[in-house]
Length: 301
Image 1 (cartoon, one colour):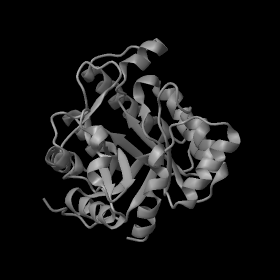
Image 2 (cartoon, one colour):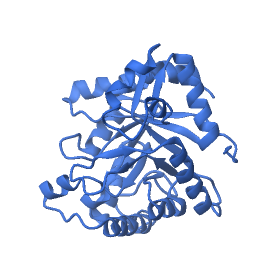
Image 3 (cartoon, helix red, strand yellow):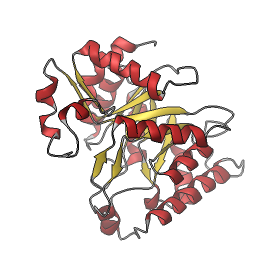
């Protein structure tokens, strides 16, 4: 399936998941900027960095990158309090914020926080209300504090199911695909990769739901592994027991895995933009350095 819209320029983000003292945190952010990352991102999990103060600190350490949440667990947040955080953070970062939202997928964190978990339907309902309330509050000239960006802070929504894709199609500036789905009834939020063909189907479903949009969204993919190597087979051996339903060849074909010689990875990233429309790629912190040469090779494309 070829990608119908004009190809967007590449953007690269890194999700910084490990808490660090002030100077170490600033150094990590400066290193991300040096490597050419366009966006510095933070998650929203207990035991990891607190999203908004971490982004304000990242803004003070850097000049160029945008700053985003990847993604906020809407179930942790009351919409009015979240609107205050978003507006203040956008102001304190000089209008560099990109707000990423999702339903949350780790029941154990809700239990620890003493927050209701709810059914999948209830979690999506809460996210829908959150998106609508943020639009209403941050779109009002009466809301204090005021965000810098108008008409609003860019919104990324991450999801995989049909209702989530519908919400994304209707509201999000950036549509984020995980290339994985939650394992049913896993309290720790275990995710299982979906195949390249299943991802085709999810992106096609999103495009159908987004057909009436004035502006097409940017499409994001979360990459789970980046290894520049001549021995692709050896690198993915650790994945085999995690995904027993996939062969080694199928694992190497997963869009969320970039493994191989540098030129092959660069070609894979170009091919996935052509096939799916993924122009914005996010990696997790352990692979920040590994993606650096790929970013360099694709600069300006």
